[in-house]
Image 1 (cartoon, rainbow, N blue to C red):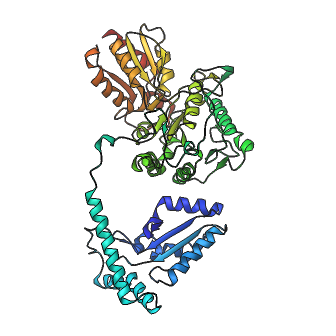
Image 2 (cartoon, rainbow, N blue to C red; image 1 turned 180 degrees about the vertical axis):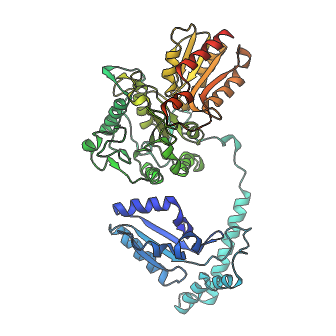
Image 3 (spheres, helix red, strand yellow; image 1 turned 60 degrees about the vertical axis):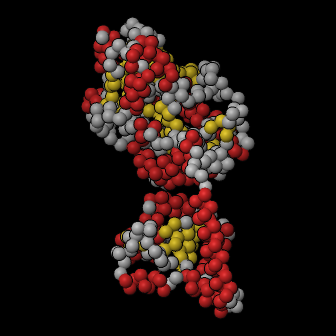
Length: 535
């Protein structure tokens, strides 16, 4: 349901394309009053009539008419509903109605002519309904007056009741940003959305890896994890542009479409807004959607959908939630560019209600992905392009029951003289840079929301020094958050200033030499380690 101007939004077009392509049972109900706040329809679409311009759409039935006529309007609605229920495809129902007041109380409609306002007032549907009921013998003048009186009484009672309600309890302000557990340790489940409210139970899992076979690259490890979860859970669906027969532009879904079919692993149109929008519907229907956004930069058109998904649990007080796993490849690879190679993971850390995972190797990729697929929160799962086939990131497959709970960092190297905090592709560089240096402790955060503050704070308290290394731009990168926490919690333990290394505030360059100059290199990381050790 929307107004006429909602038909100009990208979300409307994404939904319309999906619905008509697959002949889905959707009813698009548009109340057309000719204005979007103060903007007339003539500015929204050629000729000021969206429905007329949509007539060429295939598989879409149009039901169009006057929404103020008490006899015709119900018939139009009935016609639209019956078509959708018939299974013949979607329907667009457009009812034209007057707008009898401004968009808000402050909106005096000075942008409308006096003649237009008078014309709208003359189309007020209530007097038409009154006249029709009286002429049809359904209601007398007195009966209508009684109806008006009862309606006014109910409104006044509702206002009085609302005014008597106490102010909300501020102690519950931050509840239900994420899924919670009750005092008995049982999940405090939402009423609808995700797998758990329906009673779904997952197999036993373990945090202990049981390595098997030869070393796999991260790409194969991700594919193998998706394969297993699709196999054991019929409610998992994997989709996105090119993830079907092609197997993904990075080959992460290669062979999954052939194995699980069009209803489980499938392609979508090139619409990130639509990809995430349909994911929300699937999650609310009790499925586990695994949408792929082909490259990190391409998530921007879906930002509104992602934001609304993250806050759903909080704004409904745990009535609704949409757990899903959004796979997003990104970061530099053999070459860079501003569109495919951006990192910018901090944007999703700042999106309320979203978990963010950034594995640095194949074993962690398996454990974090499986945990996300079985969790009750929406997750951004960042697949770094450089690490997908990097030799350093290869590990044996850790087993079909292996998980890594979010918020648990991994200490790659132990030391007492310097703490190095990193994640994603910088883990490999920091690990190599620390070789041969005495007392350097290297911590891979693995997840940024939540992140393991306790491990980092304990380490820095012990070492007295900290170097934070990340690929994302320096200003307002997640390293700034880590540094701020350490400044608060470890100030009196520090023997040197907290130092950050990151990409300058610039896009990812195309040229390989420029790219390497922008990224924290292994050599410069080592030089900063040595410098801090000598302070």
